[in-house]
Amino acid sequence: MGVAAVALGAFGAHALRESLLQRQTANLWQTAVLYHLVHTVALLTLTGWKADSAGRLPPVIAAAAGCWTGGILLFSGSLYALALGGPRLLGPITPVGGLLLLAGWVFVMISGRRPSAGSVNT
Image (cartoon, rainbow, N blue to C red; front, side):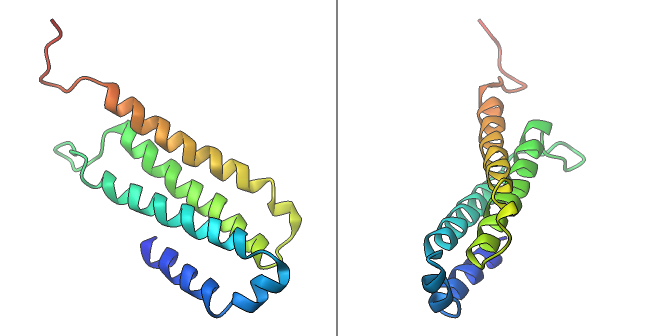
């Protein structure tokens, strides 16, 4: 995901620059790259979460990862396509991706509110 985000950012800034400026969609491309890159870094942080003995992340963290991955694909992917002149029917896909990105953050917040296995409530 990180390689793709950086490559698409560079591609948009150089190879597609004139095309995006003519279409007046450079801002769409930049927004897609920003959210793609930020959520890729967020995904990377999830690798530091403690896994169980089988190597699985806690279900709520796995859900966050799934939401962020789907959100990147739908949110940034639809913006990339729209910036390149893709069909306008892709427009409604963007907010679905945004909702997945938000849901991923909600899952991370939920995981942060759970007491650890060894904690004692007094």
